[in-house]
Image (cartoon, rainbow, N blue to C red):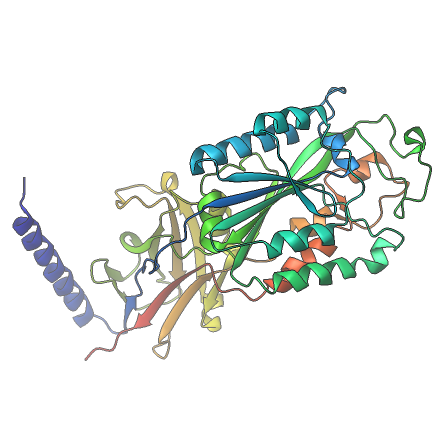
Length: 431
C-alpha cells in the first residue's frame, strides 16, 4: 500500500500531466476558450441544532372526515401523523410537543399514545370552524432558531360572514404580515389525498341547515380530498428534517426559501464530447472551435445522496435552469441524467449529472452560469377551486376551495429568493 508520501507524489504528477495536456491542447487551438470552473464551497459556520418540534393538528369538525373509522375507504391521515411523530421522536430524542389548534393552539397534555388513539377515533376533531389566518400567525411567530413547526390541516378557508372569493385576500395579507418577519425561514408544503366522509360545510357562508343530513354530500364518501402538512423553520433545520424523507407518500410537494448550499458538486473529466479538455483537479475547462457542427459537451456531477428526495425533481428538470449570459440560451442545450443512465467510471459518489452542450462561443464571453431556480408551483393552480357549492362530487377531487389565498402569502413573501445552485465558469486569461 502507498504511504502518504507516495500518494502526494502521484497527486503532484497527475497535476503536472494535466497541465501539460492542457498546454499542448492550447497550442493547437485556433480559437481558445479557457475557463476556471468555480468549485463547490461547503457552507461555513456552525449548523443549528434541532432541539424542538412543535406539532399542530388543526381540529375543525371537517377534519374528522379524514379519519372516519366507521366507513370503509382510504384514510391515511391517522397513519401519516402517527408515524411522523414516532419517527421524529426516534430521530431527535423526543423533542416533539403536540398542540391541537382551532383558532389558537392548545398544548396536548396527555401521552402521545393517547393522542394517537384519540386521533384514530376522531375524538380530537370536533372543534368549530377554524380561521386559518389565526392559525398560521401564532405558528409563524413562534419559530425560533432551533425549532421547527409542523401544521396538519385541510386548509379550508373560513371567513365567517364574509364571502371567501371576494375577501380571501385579507387572509393572504394577514399571513404575509407574519411571514415577512421571518426572512430566514424555509417552508415545505406536502399535499396528501384521502377519502372523506364527514361534515362538509353547507355553503360558503355556512348559513344553511344545521342538520348534517341536509348538508351537501351527506353519507357520501368523497374521493381524493386533499389535506396538507406544512413544515416551517430555519432553512438548514428544514433541509435536515426533509432529508430524512419522512413525507415520501405525499401526492405533491413544494418548498419556499430552501437552500441547497450543502449539496456537493464538481466538474468531471468524463463524459465529454467535442474538442474540450478538462482538468478536474485544477477545475480548468479548455474548449476549442466551439461551433454548431462541432459542439462541446462536459459533465457536472452532483451528490444528492443525503438530501431530500424532491431535490431530484428540481435538479433533473432542465426547465428550472437559467443560462447566463442570456445570448447563450439559444446555442446551449442542457441534459440531466442519473448515475444509472451514464456508463463508465464516474467516481466520487455523484448521483446526478448536468451536461451542458455549447454550439457557439464568443471570446467576449467572460463568464458562463447555469443557475438552478425554484420556479413557482404548478400544482397550486391545479388545486385551487373557485366554487365548491352545488358542484358534482368529482369536481372536488384533488382540489381545495380558495386555496390560492393561503399560498399567495408565501409566494409574495419568498418570491425573490436566490438560485438553489450555481455552476459557474470564469474565463481565464492566458498568453
